Figure 1: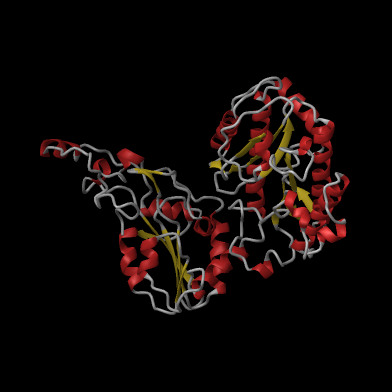
Figure 2: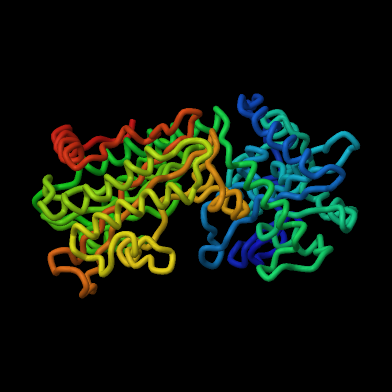
Length: 493
């Protein structure tokens, strides 16, 4: 299970276009290499991962738990997408390498954890210079001991995983499925599958990890704040090069933010949405092949993913010319009022749905002021109607953490139908979207889209806006945009 795990390439890690080297060259390559050790040290956050494994262990006494990170995915032919570890695996280990698998085996009082990983290229064969996994091609990997020192976690060679999985007891093993096809195949479901294709026992493992992630500890909040602060800098970078009087491509703006994300973090946390003019009305506009227009609005939904994979998720709308028109300001202020009401409603014990209803009522009232609702606000808010959602479509927000849509496997009763708790981090992102083809709105509103999104921490007394480094009111946005333009373009440094 150590080579060719993902894409059908030759099992020795070579490609069909690789040359057939003469023996003289091979013999020469095997000589004269100095061995060096990586300068590793225990990572300061390693105890956080150990606490999470202990909590998961306590939830499943006497059972073996198998959590893969996933494998590289083919982009085209023999090229792969940049690897991003599985979020649950990274949450429990801190490891970012592909193919690794965490196995928790019961020991009577808890679990023994072992990280199965691909160790550094052996100098005892030709892998280090011939294989696509070799360190002369992709860089030096950790030895088992180096990785163990860094993560505070026992390690084993990935070549031993197959035998380990074959030895696990049916009915006493749970697998986080959908990340590694070979792991899934090695441990057959013991209790059938649900309608969604998940064995019930394995589904319970995914739920437990997701619900464990609902409450962020102090270190996680710090990671989120770092990602959000980098995101603020990214929005500033974009504003500084956004011209007021001429068009620029959405992809230029996307690229400027991506530069900040790669410099200050791991990458963008999700595909950046840069929607100019009518593209702002498309909720997940990621083509970004349009251009800004003076006088129109620009919606940008972007977030930096930090080096430990916690991500920000922020949306701002800018008037390209520098000032909102009267109608643009009216729509923007409705959305701002909705968001502010939602943030003010957040505190421990409040129902997630109640925050949603708080935001939506303000939007519905704004739509009534615009003369768009075909019924009263109360009728529109009735669950049997919800006609206001023609112009909102989505809910008020979602959990945020090591995934942009964190805790997605949590049960409905603990998430959407649950109550907020101290340490939760969630987005608040109401919006109004008037499609260019919508004949039920006045022509001057068509193509106007506004969403304001911030990342909010639930505290013991209420809520803290972690992304308050960016302006929110219409007046503040205009002032901020002018200040950024006056400051001029900058490179990350």
